[in-house]
Length: 327
Image (tube, rainbow, N blue to C red; front, side, top):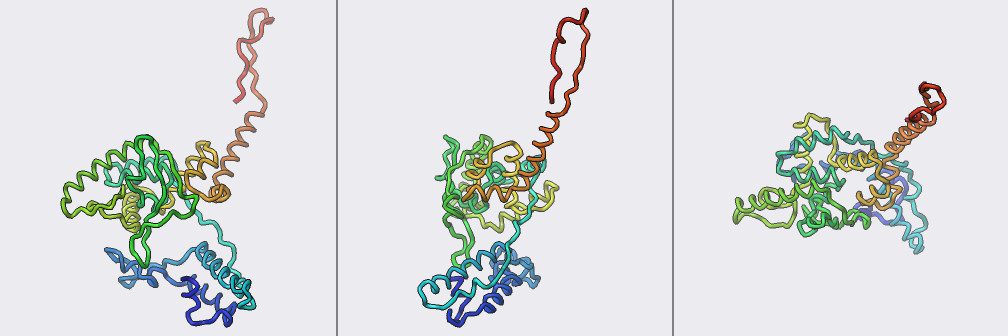
């Protein structure tokens, strides 16, 4: 689909490196909200749909992915000897830098949970901070995926808004993202209360209730739009008096706080559903470096000269009652 959109009526044999470079540069500078009409489909249009461009540009990582798809398509034609060369390989896009993020501190995370105390989606925000689930994984969670008796959840689908089908249930991001995770006790309690609340909403809605089977729904039973969840989260941050961050930064906050508590990297990798532990190690390299510094400083303190406290004891022949501690 992507290659067809790029090529249009141009034949692969007529494609040049300049064509690829021009198209990628156009993608890099084009607002996706305007082009795809994202804002126009929202309940309350705020930016492009009302004439105020929000400059929602593709990230460098997305552009690199698009370029890799373009390189793979002509590559097949070269292997089959249908075209002489792969011009997409002659275009350099550069290596994208990891996206910087500022995770919540432990105090800020507690402030978020406190502010979410009376929110109807309190269980969702608590689950996000305690498990690091992605937004789509949280919204795609169904009651049949939960086993509240054993305290586990099966992550096997994600809810996304697509240009063609609107809100759509899709497979998880990668095969490794399909996993079973343990749920903290406080999340189990919140989910039980949330289920009771959902039942009351169902009774209040009566015949207008639209059963979807999702754990987190609107008051009428419909699936929650990811954009609306983002807006609710921003309102929650404002209520808590905290700086504005992305919803995805809750996931980074979970991993960072776990690392600071000494949890092994492989456990965090399995919880987050990363395909390879190298992904986890790369994304949270700054946290590991800080922890290394703390560990080295602690070791330096331990290896320093201990302070020996001499105690006199009568004749001085007996040893002191206790040795000096090395901290």
